[in-house]
Length: 216
Ligand code: NAD
Image (tube, rainbow, N blue to C red; front, side, top):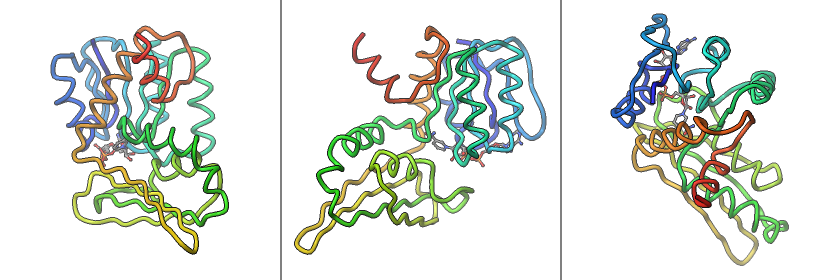
């Protein structure tokens, strides 16, 4: 596939270029400008919220689908992204690890059983991460279906740890996901890119990408 990438010089950009090595990077976008060789068939964005306008402009210019992994987007930016789904296929996720999607599905299904327990979320990321709480912590809180205290640690080179803890007076349950390397996110982004290439216009979650792949 011929792909375009916003944030091409970043940590995730490097990981995506490595995992997509059998595909062709034809449009790279970063702070130093654009590097265009051909129209991309799909655009990916793993950068910062400030770059979203350039990515949306590129998606309209090339009329191609989008895989969006950048976190920390404002409510207005998310509205723009959802709106784009009426024209092209868009997969947006704060976390492209399959295990986080599983955790989200477990919480959605079973968190109501813990409705009268205390619940707290904690996340740990590398010390260069810009946003807090992480997009994944917000995604897990949404799956939990209620507001709860959320704690962020920024330490060393941790790719991403998330725990959801429940406790009452007598017992405690903690569900944890740990990304062992960044490549897991890039592998998920590749699945999402393959999905959007043949998907109808719409706004899709990574859960829909994974459940659709399972039905095939
Ligand atoms: P990074 O800081 O290493 O890379 C960001 C890149 O974006 C840099 O190369 C930077 O120069 C570029 N950039 C910043 N502002 C820009 C602008 N205005 N125009 C063009 N380029 C711009 O960060 P990272 O660790 O690679 O993470 C990138 C994003 O991906 C973050 O939002 C992070 O939270 C997110 N992320 C998502 C997932 C997921 O699975 N969805 C996983 C990991 C990281």
